[in-house]
Image (cartoon, rainbow, N blue to C red; front, side, top):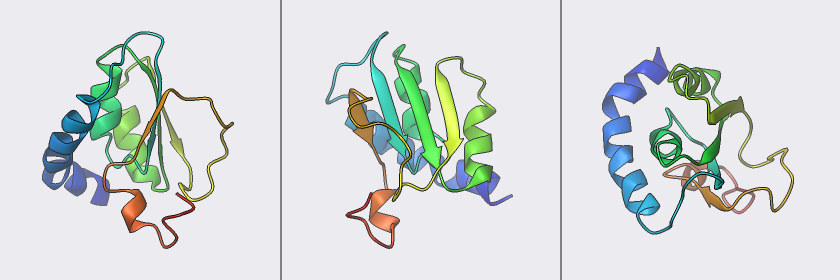
Length: 110
C-alpha cells in the first residue's frame, strides 16, 4: 500500500531528478547500472529504456515489487540494504541513488 502511494505521489517528482542525472552520462546496450534505494524505480526504469542492464535495490519489498511489476527484461529488482550491498565491486558502469542515500542512518555506508 505504501509503495503504491509513493508511486503516485513521489515517483513523478523523483523521475525529474532521475532524468537529469541520466542526461549527464551515456548509457546504452551493454551498460551496467545500479540504482540503490530505488524506491518505485524512477531511475531504474528510465535507465532500462536506454537498453542498459539495470539492478535496482531497495530495502522495501513493496518498492521492489513495484519495479518488478514493470516486467522489463533488462531490470533485476532485489530487496537489499543499501548500507550493506551484497554485490561485487566494479560490477557496474554507473551507480545512482536518487534521494535514497541521504535517508540512510549512516549515509557513508551507502
